[in-house]
Image (cartoon, rainbow, N blue to C red; front, side, top):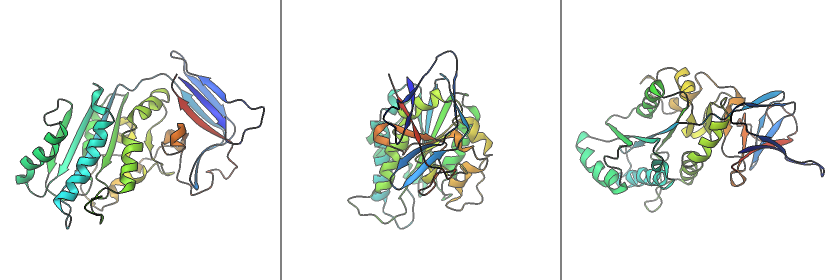
Length: 305
């Protein structure tokens, strides 16, 4: 593998700066220029005078915690089931469970304990994961928003290894008004694909950048992973403190990831140039301007050899 630092607006004589990754010694790149990644009308940048560290330290085990709410008031069971089954099917199609080191944790909220057998039949058996050795399933019957999922994330982080990675996502759009024919929101489909189903790409980047703490479609300066679809190292999750059921405000669980923020140079933006494999390290949601106010010059590209 190589890491390439490349100018966005190159001079004719500029060649991309290739950093070969040593499997024994870590590689450090000191930059005295701002780096940038672009997407749409937004820009995400890296501050000046930042040191980026590369090291061959493979991720050993990956966990995905999926939180699905099948008990949203004023929504039909068919619609909620379509959202949850659609997301889980996407994760399975990504090949996540084909890797023997990966584990899928599913927490489902049901309106009543009597619904457990039907949920197991209509969802887990249909997807082919009923009693799968690397699929753990839990049920709850109370609306506590995303607390059960986040609490499971924290519990996994407490026993995970130092080179493990934990991903989290949820049934976004379950409370929205959508048509019966298209119950899933386009943004939810994109988040599921570009964050969670991109687990191989995420694994590759975290394996060579030991300083990275979180990855999301994009992050804030306070290290919130927007839309609560993210990957994080167990050590960073433990720093956030044990989740508590109160307060149970709907948005609290997005803020939980930022109780003890990671520095911007320890955050990964998965949205920048997704078709070209371009990402920014030190990404923040900056609404069209660079973090340090300077003109962008370079981006970071990862690719496998």
